[in-house]
Length: 134
Image 1 (cartoon, one colour):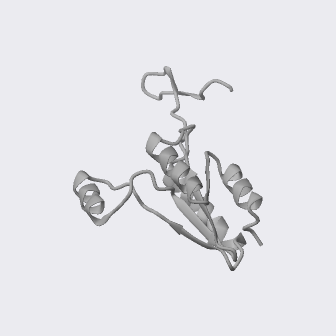
Image 2: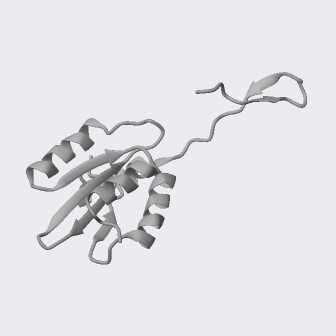
């Protein structure tokens, strides 16, 4: 990897590091779902589970409503026979949390598939692997 880009400050005339642009999980998921809308097979159902909330009050309300910590970002269902894939999306070099891995282990015990990825290319590769694209 190369060094971070530098820029000269117009007032101090010193060089400073330009912060890199981070690709958030939200942006990653939106871009992936937009691509899925164009390429997913018609017999595949996909939905998102939103577990993150901007404040503690909303989190408490959703927990009371039955939100399960660790549930994957996207769930795909197709068949027959009925099959299910749980896909956890990560960005910025992050890894799944312990709760997310526990959910994945439970899903596998129930006969579902569980995968996680940290790039758009990897996400597309996973849905291709299961034959979910046109």
